Image (cartoon, rainbow, N blue to C red; front, side, top):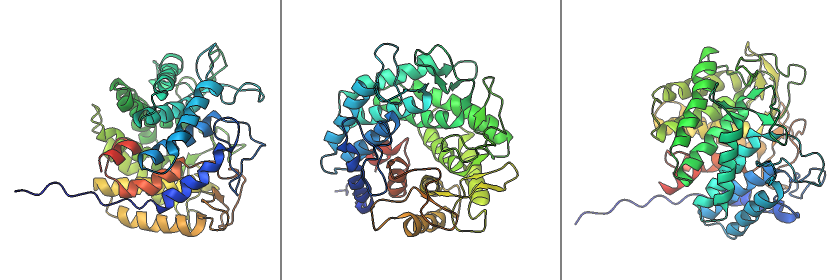
Length: 401
């Protein structure tokens, strides 16, 4: 009689539980999930946000899948808010803030991608109401934002989708790749994987490769890189000038996840992922002589913004774990160990809870770019991916362990 398959090692969820327990405070407001300050209280100076509501909904859906208490109710809260507070029943799509809280601004592919990620993950983990939200987000992306000529998503539109922003951003398209992978599985639509591949072809196989992996982030409406974009405001939280180290790591992980999905014409992705990873490690770590990853570099590799962002080291850990699992970088396991130690020693806040989102170059808590601790999304990946097998997204990894 043959033995059955070996049981998977239990996950170490201690830090995941700490992260999620801190994040629960974001449910203390009237709508969705609020912006948490450093102590875990909702900062009322920030209006309700579709971005934070979507990111928290995703995080609570993953926590529910892991069996953490009462997270299903938090997922339901998030989905209800996305459907009722942020969905535009007149023009379609999702507003950045609800009506009645000031100018809702433009509708963006970045926000919509996180709605799709959250709703797809919530639906896949058992919230049936999330299916409608996922369909609306998917349809908005494909019908309103998709640029057939460039095979990427436009960045934003006016509320009625009549006027596009004269800009194409890598950040929005990067998160769209992750959302499309999640939606492909949840909605049983493999064609979404092909869209994710097309985006990756433009951003990585064309532009990042053509820039020796010092990836441009900003493009004009014709798809030409804008190398001087935001040179006057280089520390922008979402559109910084120059090379964003964290995005090189994040793209390297996403490429390997997309390659793992079985999408066609993806044979170039492992080599590209390896080059992005090794470039980010080589030019980003201690670039100014201090431990940690700088936020941005100029095109010659000189530090521009030397603040240390928690999400950057989190993405570095996730990418290193993926490199190790794929056998692509011999030092990857050592990198995981080094960067996990850095994360816990420098960013963990043992006094007020959770992890600092930003440190100065000399390691002191800072808030010149990020305010408070509103985001569980990046760190959740870093705490889990090193313990999980390869897969096309975090939920897929959990389910195949």
